[in-house]
Length: 184
Image (cartoon, rainbow, N blue to C red):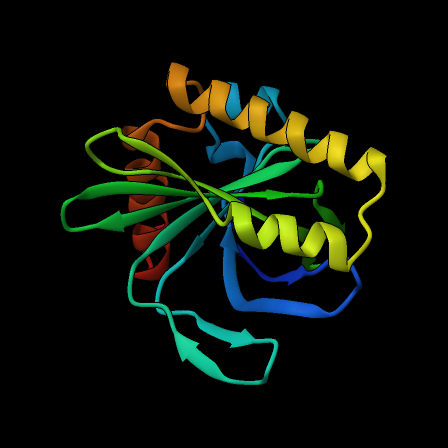
């Protein structure tokens, strides 16, 4: 049976400086992935009480368990946060992931989509995107990819397409809990 494998996730800004690092994220084995997630080549990670390091060196520990979804070639990633009131999806418009050994990296393009447990959807940090677009001199290609990524992400959110399925989020987290406690 496949094991959960630890990865580091690093988020950068367009100019190459580190934005944030999640130091321990457990990759869900391919054999455990839902058929639709396998078909899309998704990489799914669990983190709970993981140490997070900010660009300025400050560290803190996440309090809310998360299940992260990365779909190859897509200009976004999705983090399902398992809160007491339900699953909140925090989605980053970002470059496609790059994986080197057990380190996953991407460029964060500021725009975020949040879907609350009551299914309301908010687009946030548009002002930050506009500021960075000028400051980092995003090319027209990057601007196009960001807009396409946001549109594709909103389509998935609004149509409840994978991975916006609370039952799968909970399933992955429960499988990791079993593994962690020696039952996997």
